[in-house]
Length: 594
Image (tube, rainbow, N blue to C red; front, top):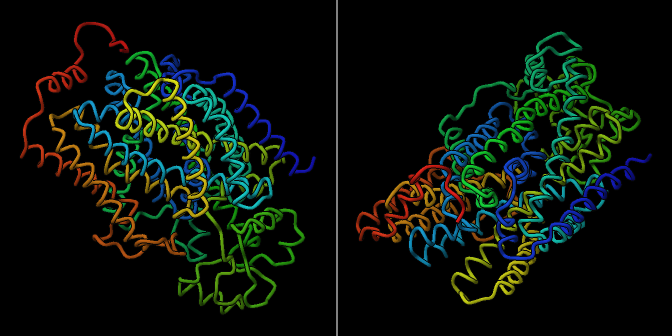
């Protein structure tokens, strides 16, 4: 069967499943729209949270960034996984015990201030909107290749699908849709990884194959990879990071940003008890680990495959010829991806070969010139977001595996996009409209406003997705930094300190504003994003990049909040009692939902 038809069958079947589930689980009340009626089983919630959590950044982009940067980008794995543990232990049970629908509602009640609630809404919308851009970027990449449409058309199709199951289903529909999406994405991620691991190492478990031997050479896989990439002038795959401070801050930003992500926290409002929240957190870790333990192997093996394809006779031989690329079926995937504009090459010296090497490395450049391959790298464009999606084609796997990966990549992007859009719409309808503008609004009116807010958010996210500020994982990292600098400190201080309302508001504003300014300056955007948005300007503070600044923003948030709180009046007695009741269990047994 033709590959294009297979892609349509797999993707179409998955979309029909999602929409069918949404119709079956359509939200009929605000409780179902915001919290799925608080009746979701911990295992089901764990699977849904895993899908909500493992976005396009995890499925599509992360392995690509690891592949081309090496072990340094394993900080994505450490930060995201460590952050989820922090969320599960330090925040989720306490927020569930508080018994509200949204993060902003908790902040508004805990800090006894409509202003604090409004500021939290602003922080939430800024972080979630930045995050959802990364998901829409992933949707465009996947659709552009597998349905052979342009990026704009792909985004519009994806937006329509999200609209169909998120606007009407709310949290109830999204929850059960995300369960299906988790199954699709984890199967789609692991099956190609198993095939590729068997091909390269003979081991069916990718994580073990990564530390095994390369079947063709008999050398350790990582040693073989290091040898090839260093001979091409690139840094060794296992090379130690050069900037410890930036790596530590980046990992910390991802960790605390994770713990402050409202769309993930909202998932813990859907279970019936605090004990269920703890259990669902544990199950989520299990489901996340299945992908995150596989990603480093996927990145390393894909980088090895690409290098060997570009130098089929080894780095002491000849680079791949244009004739081979045009006539050998192993290279068909390159021609297909070239049509999307995400992969490109050019025979610059007209020798009929495509030389792939680091032309910034003087020694390798001199070697290439002496061999007559020219002085410039001729693989001119390789978007890192395509790596996981292209992996089955690179490894020459069956067509059904390629189609399955397409469905998995879209499932990852759409599941997280739905969660983020639900967080945005909940903040607008429940916290802004009901909480500030029209407190007397009816339940029916609030439900309608939530759906309208969701629709508007989808339109805005689609528009911004057409002009992303970086690769999917890089854009997501910016969102984590914003959540780290604004929402996480407020949640931590709300549970574990006696900071007052003035301190909380001042801290959130300081953290958000300083981090936004730093990101805009470091990315070179100023007031209008320029065409070089994927490249950073020189850091303004030492070597700290925009994706790492969230940890600094969080410290500023904490410092300002405590300073302002100390200089103003203490919290009221009833709020003091509320904080104690949330943090310290009273009586025997599990605390029940309100």
